[in-house]
Image (tube, rainbow, N blue to C red):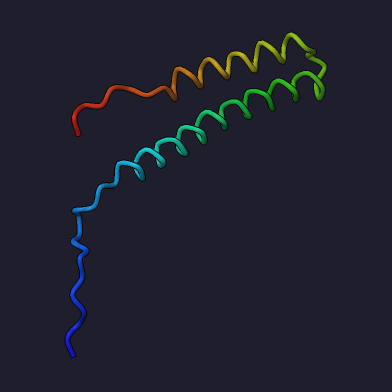
Length: 79
């Protein structure tokens, strides 16, 4: 018995909404992880060591700045 005919043709569907949703979720994950890591380091340095508030603020800020520089989007090279 032959299979049913289908209107679906591989590769012809518009996937712009799925692509933008994927990029949104990846961006939230990336930047949310950076915020959590910076805050966690700040709080650990402040409360769990003898370094104090300002040392925690400085180390959390350094991690945040480095993360922003390393995680920002770069222009694509046309691929």
